[in-house]
Amino acid sequence: MPNKDHIPALDGLRGIACLLILAGHFLTQNRQALPPALLTAFSQYWSGVDLFFVLSGFVIFLSLNQLRERTRGFPGLLVPFATSRAFRILPVYILFLLAYFCLPLIEPQLSRDELFLSSVPKCLYLFFGQSWYMALRQRGGAEFVDASWSLCAEVFLYALAFVIVCFAPNRNRIKAMVAAAAVSFACRLFVVFFTDNFLAAYLLPVCRMDGFMLGGVVAELYARGGLASVNFQRLNRTLAVLFCVFAALSIGARHFASGFSILFSYAFYSVFYSAILVRLTGGGFPILSRGPLSYIGTISYFVYLFHFPIVYWMRNVAEDRHWNVALNFAMTVGVTVAAATLSWYAMEKPIIGLGKALNRRLASR
Image (cartoon, rainbow, N blue to C red; front, side, top):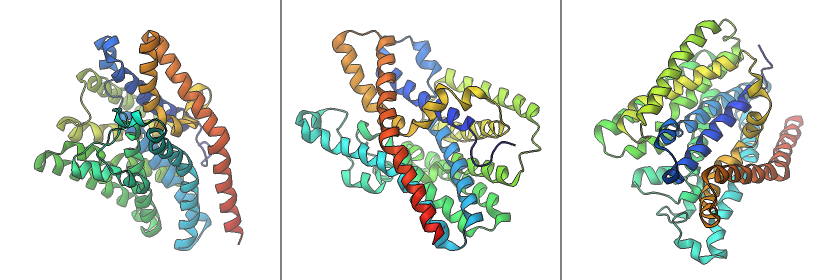
């Protein structure tokens, strides 16, 4: 088994999730200039968010397990976990919200642009309440900050993961995760059969727990050495079948807020991406462990949050300068990666280092 502290291939898998969402939003923003077959092939790009949830569940539960082995008591677990999460997610998120809040003030005409039109009170973004408001009120937020709904779900899931690791006995931890995943599916069933608010099934954190929890199950088994006996040949055959289902869903172009997707696709992607995660724990896959995909995975947080406004603005630039779609895509990816690289080296990486240093200082007391 590889080093339990880090599985390099996960960076590449995170890069794939990020590129899947970026490419999907680019294609939908430029659909008039693209062949329908290409749009169909990428119709399930939104499942990249489900892949992010599975990866986050794995990483968060694995890190919480490691923290619990080194610390004792509620405060000893809460402080380093909260510190590491805050230093990781807040700097880029604050920058993201500053851009959303301040750009219309600098350029007043932007307040009438569809990218900034919103029925969600801006104060809710400060407390990760946007997805709850949009789902329960059935009102849309500004497209500029549309990607932040999943961060709202992640923060909820961080808290739930902490409660499970802190209070569930080791022998019952996997059962607690499976129960949370079952509750998530039950909530989606309720939405489909007893309400007409299908968007709530996509946005509400309680409806999106299964991918995160299945990633946690994989993390728990991995930490215990329970994946060492996995028959990878059999798993490869299973993954081939699951990939055929994924291809069929792509051909069917199932919308993320359709009844079919809510009842089947969300659960399928949780299982599919968790199975891929199990396969990656066996090591190998240098294409994911190093190179462009791994690097995109490293800077994926900024790319994910900022990619949509960049895609939107680059579309307007391309129309003004009469660029073709290929050049537009290349420039969009280039601008996004360049901005994410600057953010990573100038802000994110140093601040993450400060968080680690702070945790070491607190642990030494």
